[in-house]
Length: 111
Image 1 (tube, rainbow, N blue to C red):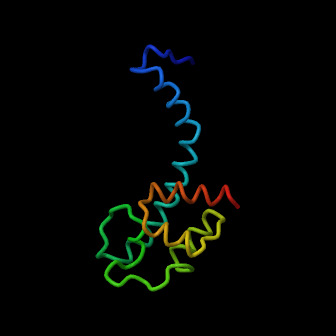
Image 2: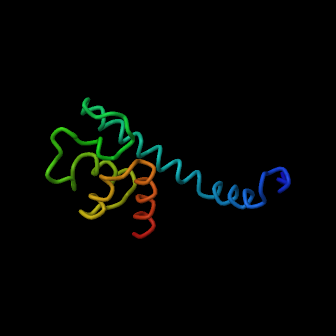
């Protein structure tokens, strides 16, 4: 099937469409797995809203002193076959799930 550029508002939209479909499934799969892990751990802390922020996998009323090697990150490491160091843990902790999924993909590519 061929998409005609004149059926789109701008010719550049066609280029964006192809670029997005090339990476969307991997992004979406990574996000979906991360979201399942997020839901599992967020439920342990009723005080946390469903804001899609990584920090909600830990208590926000009594945050942990150390987040490396905690259960949420252990689950993420196992699910994506990665190792999360202290710097990555601090960065991921402060991210929204969408950004964290992208960062996880970068960690996977760099190993």
